[in-house]
Length: 115
Length: 117
Image (cartoon, each protein chain N blue to C red):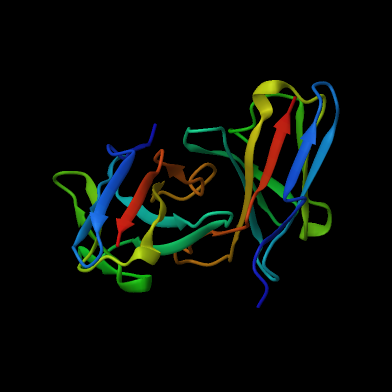
């Protein structure tokens, strides 16, 4: 079974440009999450999808960030326009739906550098 | 608000010796606790979790963790460290209530484990 995949693995852009990150969850996982780790700091929650619906977007830093999950499969996270402080590693995770507490399976992350 | 503290940025241990990576947490209600490991250039990999039941949880690669409710701790342990255990370890907590916001994991800053041959 394929794990969570993310594209690209690295992205270097200039301040003011737009970047779109993509996440493909494990097949059949209805829950999809985005997290971010800024250099040397904690991994912070950004938002949570259940299928195509945003269940919790309390961690989104501002309206320059837009996440979508059309059709409830893959998700994209767009940053427009990018700022220097957006640099970091963006992780996507997915989990199954169920009554038990399922662990979240993480992708390898996208390292974003804003110059 | 929930939080996780990993008091050590780095832990060094000799190969073959026991290792402990410390974690304390704060959360409303009963906690769901997790340990993840990140090897260089890789994503986060699930190691183990505590939901309920036995306070000693066994996980992947010979790791275990002990839940201590009175000390609000969930330290990661391994009886005999391997050089290949060298990696970045993250402790995380999730609230046990249901509903919006309950699924998000709150992570500690991570502890870099170095096992010396």
